[in-house]
Image (cartoon, rainbow, N blue to C red; front, side, top):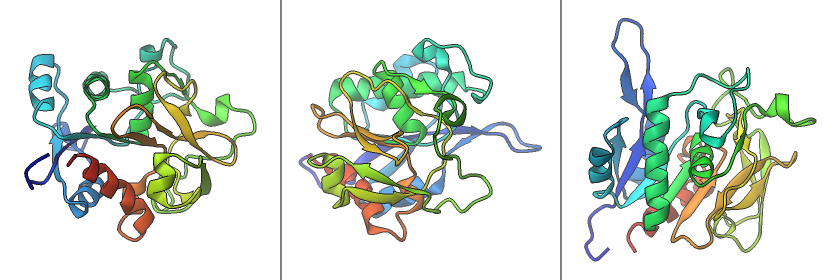
Length: 243
C-alpha cells in the first residue's frame, strides 16, 4: 500500500443470544484491541447471505481475520454430525467460507484463530476432528473453558523451524492457551501443518505460496496484552497488509 492509512481488517462476527434481546452480532473485544495495537482499523463483518453484497464489502478490505467461535457444520467437509459437535450457524459458515476462499484466491492476508483455522482448512478442502476426546485415542484435554482463565497456558506448541510462524514467534516452542474441542484432521491442499501440541494435534498451519496466511488453534488475542510474542502475530499480520 502506498499511503499511510491504517489497513482495514475485516473481522467476522458471531451471533450472540441474550435474554430479552433480539439476536445480536459481535466478536470479542480482544481481537479488536490486538489489531488496534498493531496499527490496523478493524471492521466487524456481519453474516451476509447476499454474495454480491458480501463481495462488495470484501473488495474494500486489506486483510481478513477469521476469529474463534462455534463448530462448523460438518456437511462442508462431507461428514455427518457427531453427537458432540455443537449446533452450527449456517449463516456464519456461509459468510466465512466465502470470505476465506476469496482471500486465498486473491492473495489477501489472512489470520485465522481457533475456529478460524478450522474454517480456513475446510474452505480449502480439508476436514476436522469433530471432538478430540471422542475421536483421537490418547489425546490430552484441549477444551479448558469455560471455568478457567482464558489466558491459562495449557500446553506447548512445537513450531516447525524455517516457517513464517517460527520467525514471528522467535521460538520453536511456545506455551499457549487451549479453548477448543475440535481440530484439523486432513490438512487442506495449499496448507502445511507447522505447529503441533505434545499429543500431535495440529495447532498451526500456513500457506507457503500465499503472501500471508497463518492459522493457529490457540487464542493469541487473549494473551497479547501481556505477551509480546502473541502480539507479534498481529503485528506481522497487519504489516503484511501494508505491502
